[in-house]
Image 1 (cartoon, rainbow, N blue to C red):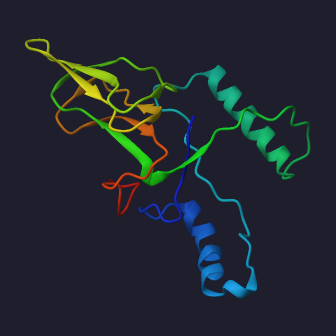
Image 2: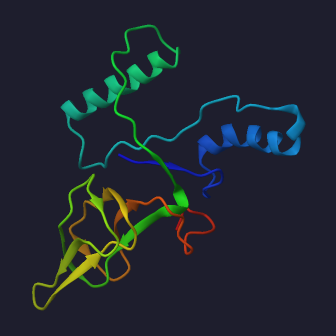
Length: 174
């Protein structure tokens, strides 16, 4: 799991349309102590190929417990989940295939990787195997479910902690 934060991420996501005006007002009127008036987030739950009834039920129960903790609905929230450190969206590194072939992942989802670790390999059935290395340290939080890669294809994402110089502009659409 990863929590990625950005005040302006690009692509005009709905959560920023709700929270952005409050941040803009607070900047415009610093003496007024304007607090954020809402909690606006985007939650991404797996991929089209990684959902089954058990996962969907657990995810729905977790969302309900969150709403109970926030006071939005009545009920018993139970113990809080383990916390996850939030990281800046501009520290997220895309894992990019350097060659064409079949993707074989060497790091599982949720793995903490160091810069230079082999995250995956691209296997050319008629040629060589090319390692795909992490370009930053962090948590491998996304892997593409399509087994075929080509040069430049994003096959995964790593939530790092240090902003990356190449991560500028519309971060959600690059």
